[in-house]
Length: 179
Image 1 (cartoon, rainbow, N blue to C red):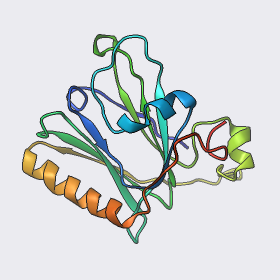
Image 2: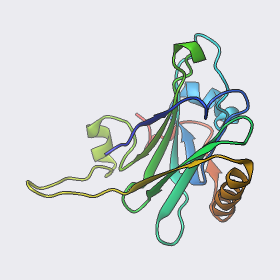
Image 3: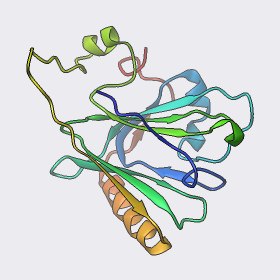
Image 4: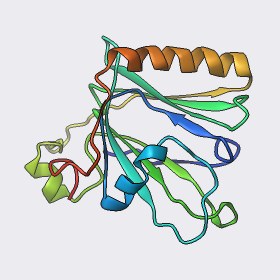
């Protein structure tokens, strides 16, 4: 299960950024490796760039709760995505990198696995088999912040989660995470 939530204006644009507390992070592809220094920047994109994806082992609190946030360039608005790492242990940040007039969006993707083929994810034990009639529940939350004090308060909370996480960054795609 992968939730792909496209986010656009007003959360993207000049000076916009992502806040993702993580244990580990890796680019999905060599193209994303080249964009690693700016992985958290959500500025408008010049024409002709291919998409970039970054994979994460998200940081979580003792109950497994994790959050990521997209903040607009002025810091006055943000959207916060919450999920439980026990249910959705992986996270991807997907940048379409199209020009704004063509629909530049960023995909926020909490998931049970990374967006690779099922065969690859099965080999790495990231698929959840369900028997006939069996179900699986997933909890997601969304919060829209409308002023700088709210945005700063939540960003501080997320930075505290990141401060106690390992925050390990891989410069190249991890073979066990990317096909």
